[in-house]
Length: 324
Ligand code: 13P
Ligand code: SF4
Image: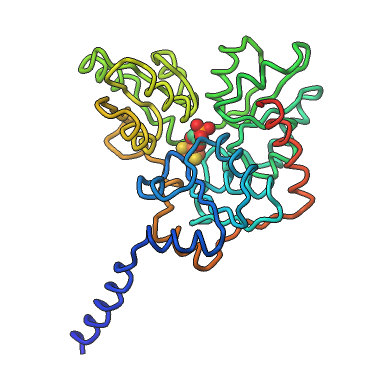
């Protein structure tokens, strides 16, 4: 009896593992006229299957420009939600609906509204890592690649609230010289890097450049040779003559760095404790199997109330116009 059961289980497992996900995803992509957008923090196989790989801004732009009927977003929820805000008539799919973001979760719209009410006369600039509800009460959205440009365009006498990332906010205050009231949110991944361990690595690799995402804490950014969004870090690694880089962001980006820069060495910045907490647990919820299943079942789908969407669209549209 037990053997028969095990045999059944074996057949089932075989059926599941026998699927060539890359080929099946490709077939479905053509059948559905779908475009697959993937963030740099996705697993290498997902990046290799995607039509576009990019940072938050590049993916929002790809979503804006696509002619596909279906957008499959291999990233986290706020990214897929942004694609839906830009494309209300398209089907927007996400492999795992639970792929959230600690920044978005740590900034609920009702609390941010109260914070806003305490600071009358301020405009609200929100980092794209936030919910549609937060986007709807924001004046302008920014990403890590256009934040400096956007803050730089705000008239000097306009007071600014920046939410939800305090580390990016603090970095922008230093970079632009603009004072801003900061919401105290942070990314659970970028807060794990240890400056002590990074400096120890630097002793081991004295020629290495330290490159960091602006969501990292101040002590990391102060020691970095270059600070930028994921696409800016990739670009720096490609153009800089150094042969070694210590990378303080989610290690998913190393896949493109290694692909685009043969012969260069990329060392992932270590977290404080001996864990793999420098990997984004939300981004890594997506797998090839889930990507395939969401296309096959046309679900989970991002669904949004039209009043909310049209309010959120205004702040995204301002960002797209201001970062032309
Ligand atoms: P990018 O703007 O560099 O894509 O950053 C998004 C993100 O979630 C970083 O943690
Ligand atoms: Fe959010 Fe941080 Fe994950 Fe980026 S790395 S999606 S900011 S939790």
